[in-house]
Amino acid sequence: MGYVLSFFILKRDEIEKMLESRIRDILHELCPPLEIEENMPVEIFIDTVKSKGIDAAIVVGRKGKVVGIVTRLDLLKILHLEVPYRLRVLALPRHPKVEKITIREIMTRNPITIRETAKVRDAIDLMSKYKISHIIIVDSKGKPKAIFSRRYLLKKVFGIEEH
Image (cartoon, rainbow, N blue to C red; front, top):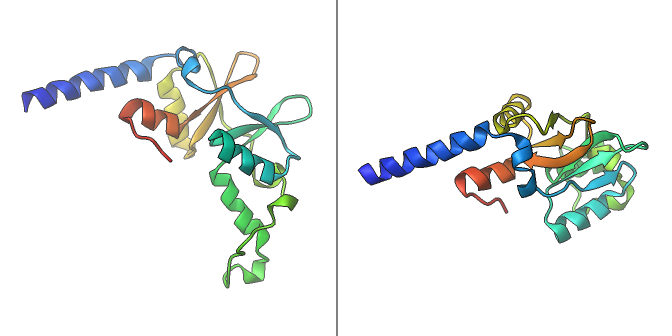
């Protein structure tokens, strides 16, 4: 039992160290963000999710400004868009017509961002406060550097892989 307790304390110390580290110190572990446009058809995003294994993308506007974020979970909004209001209770479509839907219709607008100089703990606190699974990491000029996700955190801290 002492061995398990020692292991747990050591692991807890490692976790505390990681939580207190600056986000910029883990940027190399995160994938560069995929930037997409609002008018992109959702079907292209779906293909990208499948082929690259990503779970989120940053949506940029005309001048390269971040206007939203789209995640795999946002794809479920398609089911809501495709079913006429009166029929929603009766049935869901079997094959949503995603070719007519753009990222603009399903993205989350005004996503939460955090500076790369903040602590990892701060990012987690924001994710918890706003009940979100992704937060965009930006530099001092507001340029996106990476996406910090619940998926990364679960893998890093607990060794849990989401599939």
